[in-house]
Image (cartoon, rainbow, N blue to C red; front, top):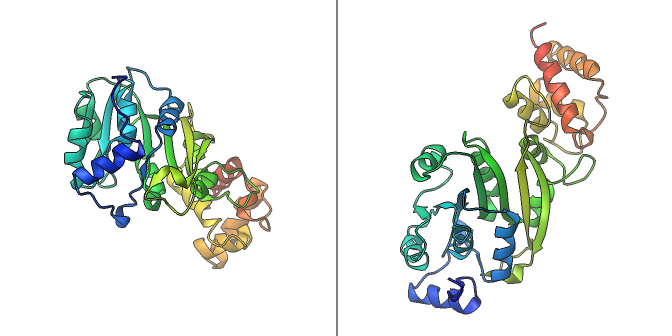
Length: 295
């Protein structure tokens, strides 16, 4: 296959789009990469092997998909745009290890589909150029799908990548940082300039690599409640933790007493801002709130 022309060259992309009379839908956040080296680097960052079960979201015309297929692992790609199914049948015709499903991944039962498609058992690797406008919902949907997601190597808006990889005390740190880092180690792999896409987006992109932790970063009594507590602390970033908590949970005397006791037992100053708390501190606070709930 070494003599096979990469899909992601500007000339071949143009040729494919022209052949099918394809026009980009802004509503689907369609931006196609036209730089094969970047795609090779994404696949390399994912450290793919022939034993891997790989999930891609938004394959477009197959530019990244072909690099995933070349690993000889099994590839399952979710494409929402019906118009691209015929294109992908053509561009990926030489690969028998790719299955394209014409579904909205956010509405799909990803675990059931994956179990039907993949012939082997085990965890999955998610490798994708995610649509900017729904990056976070897709990532969280896959993490909460019940699938054993071993790793994610995903491209997204640089600003979102900064938020996911952020540490406490920084402007970018927030509930998204906590939600992802609870399950995964997060690192920025490399930056992708906007000039590498057709059509060209307004901002630069970033590739981040997320690797599943052997166990969550902190031991919490109730995961859903932990995420609610973390989210509530960032409702209004300029407000103190205390003001955000009472806005979320309630301002009656009983609720205030419950919050005060839990903060004291967590050894957290209520005057601090949410962005200064570590994930461990949020874990401790949510556990104390649960323990003191009906006392």
